[in-house]
Length: 331
Image 1 (cartoon, rainbow, N blue to C red):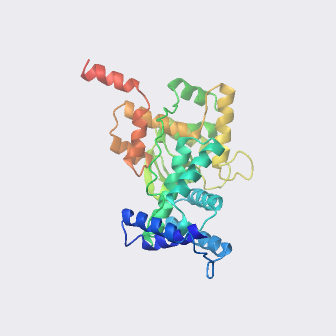
Image 2 (image 1 turned 90 degrees about the horizontal axis):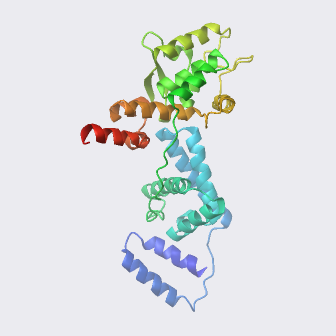
Image 3 (image 1 turned 60 degrees about the vertical axis):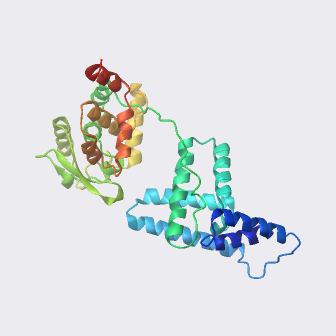
């Protein structure tokens, strides 16, 4: 009770005192209150605190939805915040930096999580508490002093030319071949491809309109091979579904992300190709574009990245590029 009382006072005085003064105030309160019994007269119940936590979390999620975040992202945000508040079991207005630092440490130990995972949690909590501070619900974000977690830069795998041709040559259906070509030549996200309709395809210009993250539209382009295989696939269809890619069985519903992932994974296993996954086509295209000298700003637009830092990650995939550049310009 005493610690909570002191925390309430410190929180209230944050706007008026600097850190040194706050520290001195805390020492004085701890000294003077040792012989005083504090009783809770108007303290909200745990149920009220829990409800307030849920209300503020819901308000934050609503704000992010207005900003254009996808429902998948919102669900991830909400689950991360809810689990954090539930585990710490305190009114979020009373959370301290030490509370959050201890939580992240224990979470990593308990789940054997990578530093990338821990930094993702930190990033979401930072966004949440910064929003609470901006909206005036709290005076100061308790996670402000918890800095970005340093992570190792992992070189992610891409497909070799031989693997791409093997996947194409062994595609069990013309639909699967068209999907592989579409992913390989456009670099679009799998979630963008499943939303495509036949009307979105412009065969004359070999381009299509996709709806990316944040409901932002952009144009992507495909090659001649993709055009031919896509036309063959659409000609073979007998259904009236507007979706570009549908299931192989009646009632020919729009194919799902899970359906494509499962199909590709099984194909990769049959061909002994390591980790066949839709996003690997995107990394492969980006790496190939950089290898051939495509300006990073143009690649950023093609991939639909909001921040160029995300696109620059692909520039670090092949160390061999550095060696070749050194021989060309220096050696």
